Image (spheres, rainbow, N blue to C red):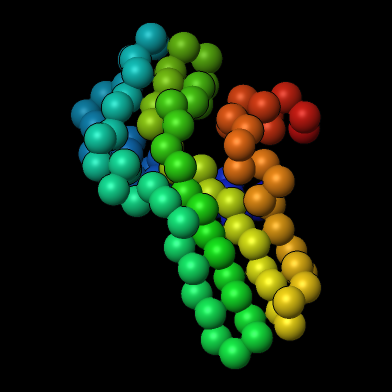
Length: 100
């Protein structure tokens, strides 16, 4: 989960760096994020890492929204899941924030 927020934070910084000024009520769209959406898989021997990225438009601060990439991961070793956030793939960013 921390990795998800870290990736979102990095993309947020890149997104704000590209814009001149952000005002209340702005909705910052980033069409280029769509090309990164999807599932990425890496395998070597008995280890497999899967990363699923999806684009969402989320509220960053009060009255400011932006497109961000949300990431989920799954690590499998010897056929057993070691760590996974894939249970949340079908949820929205707002769903996860409300549970904190």
